[in-house]
Amino acid sequence: MTAETVTFSRGTLQAPFGMLTVVASDRGVRYITFEVDAHPKSYVGMDVRDDAQHPVVAAAVTQLSEYLDGSRISFDVPLDLVGTEFQVDAWNALAKIPYASTVSYAQQATSIGRPKATRAIGSANGRNPVVIVLPCHRVVGADGSLTGFGGGLHVKSWLLDLEKRVSAQSK
Figure 1 (cartoon, one colour):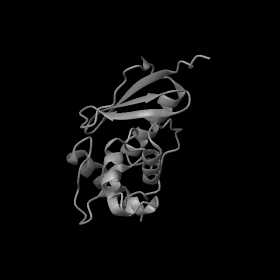
Figure 2 (figure 1 turned 135 degrees about the vertical axis):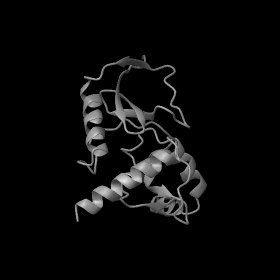
Figure 3 (figure 1 turned 120 degrees about the horizontal axis):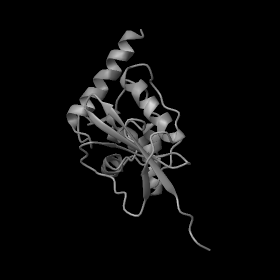
């Protein structure tokens, strides 16, 4: 029996802080990456084609655009997450952090039943393959300080400020 070959499609979006790239299969979004990324994703062994019209890529780009212009506060694109069980648990916990809120790494670790895994949470978040959609930018240090972010702390700050502005306008 041979393994099935999965073709991935790619599209881009110009964000206020740089280019975002979306890579997806028919199953869902595999990666969203920053133009300058401290944790670049490897496409080695992947068949990736430029196709911004692919339905999952197009939906993700549209939803990201809406998020960035303040008209969307949650995402409903399918995801195609690949990682260890712990990583996937950590990434899924990110989706539960409310818009315009922050949690500490320790709170995120506790939320998945692993209260002593704070450092491992930080490592998993650093490898978050679907940034913004899975909002690792909402995870901060125990003292509320902005810490590590693949797109840079200036992008993390920009995203958190956007959410605060949008949230304040809706009140």
